[in-house]
Amino acid sequence: MTTAVPTDRERTAVQAYLRLLHTVQAGFDTAPGPPVVPPSVLAEADRALAAAGLDGNEDAFFRLLGSWCPRP
Image (cartoon, rainbow, N blue to C red):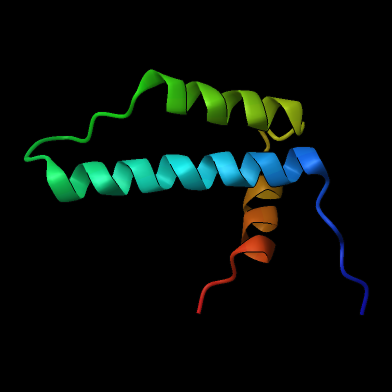
């Protein structure tokens, strides 16, 4: 079975997304209202997705994310 190795840019995009996800989760855990996500975290994720050619291509991104972080 052949395994595709993510590029550095794809890896960066997944890592940025996971940081964004963890930031949102922390916001839900600590604040009584909607979570406040720092604009820098959103911008990092946007830049990383664009650099990897994944902005606007959710299917490809979530396939990549699923291969990086499979659900238990």
